[in-house]
Image (cartoon, rainbow, N blue to C red; front, side, top):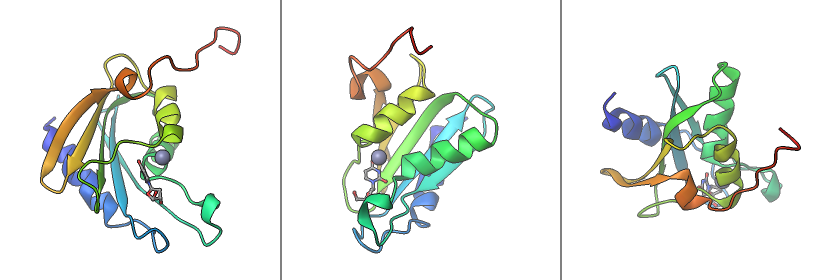
Amino acid sequence: MPKNELFVAAREAMAKAHAPYSKFPVGAAIRAEDGRIYTGANIENLSFPEGWCAETTAISHMVMAGQRKIMEVAVIAEKLALCPPCGGCRQRLAEFSGASTRIYLCDETGIKKSLALSDLLPHSFETEILG
Ligand SMILES: O=c1ccn([C@H]2C[C@H](O)[C@@H](CO)O2)c(=O)[nH]1
Ligand SMILES: [Zn+2]
């Protein structure tokens, strides 16, 4: 699957952001194990802490479609050269990622950086006790 398709999906998702407070639209697109693309945008709220990120919306769509594995994810922000996922989203991405999962940081022209989750979240929380 051409990576460009994932970038275009993230850019299209960004146009659906509800970001009237930060005026910082973000889009994300996940390719899951089934080969399909699940997208998301940030959805803010007048009660500021109640909003959530584009990556979180995309993960929700993927999970509700019955998928549990992220193969690749593209992230784009309208007003930032590259938008690395926030700490909370790194942990949420980790829940559904593996060693081969790739995270693509995009600008308005395409994918500019490819990272592994371990680049973004080294020494992550893991325990056998909780399974
Ligand atoms: O990786 C990120 C970083 C920020 N945001 C959103 C949260 C908030 O709505 C706005 C400004 O932080 O951008 C995302 O969606 N993804
Ligand atoms: Zn986030």
